[in-house]
Amino acid sequence: MDYGLSRGCNVLAYDLPGHGLSTGRPAAIDAFAHYGDSIAAVTGAVDLSQLPTWVMAQSTGAAALIDFARRYPWPFDDTVLLAPLLRPAHWAQVRLAHVLLHRFVDSVPRRFAVNSSDAEFLAFLQEDPLQPRRIPVNWVGALRAWLATLPLEDLGVGPALVIQGDCDGTVDWQYNLPQMSRLFPGCHIQQVPGAGHHLANESAGLRQRYYRAIDRYMGLQARYEPA
View 1 (cartoon, rainbow, N blue to C red):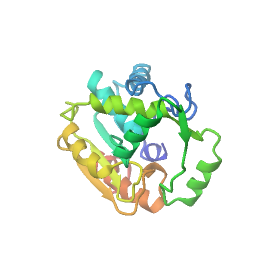
View 2: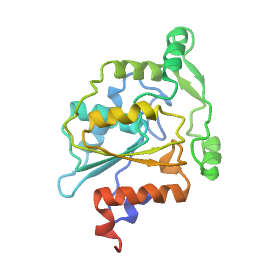
View 3: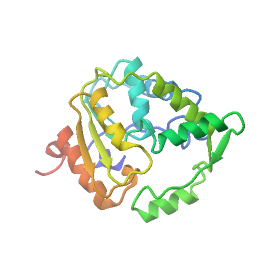
């Protein structure tokens, strides 16, 4: 949010279902299509026609955008994806665990990974009352079903800028990045050495490195900052 506001943009932000202040069981989803539907509901509630509209999404938010692109008219002029989710890391083990456990347990304990070099942010996550302490098993089932029906082909919405840290242990980025090129042909991939999964909450120095890439991609530096 601060990034957009600092460049003179109007910013519209919301929490996905089951995240933050949104309603629903924390961290749970019955179908990934609900994430795409939530984007449609939010964009349908505001008038986006008068100004250029850019979209930026991280992790599951990027998966939500992909689902939205498959089923709704695309209103965005430029797209930025931060550490986009298709497969999580260790996906084969995650799938096997889901097959074995989903009939017997409905959630598993959450492990707070070290996914940012910002120690203050990591400490905040541990104390944040909105952070779930358990992960519902149905989230993994919903992801499995969604990936099984997702054609890895051109979404027809143009290219995207994909920002990815090479220390990300949350998503299987080595698999995901080539698939982004299939979904968004002509996409630009910017890797950030030393960055973890939580790119939006990385250390200030790492954020400034990929901010410059976003500025160049969307022309924001030329519009809102001295050259």
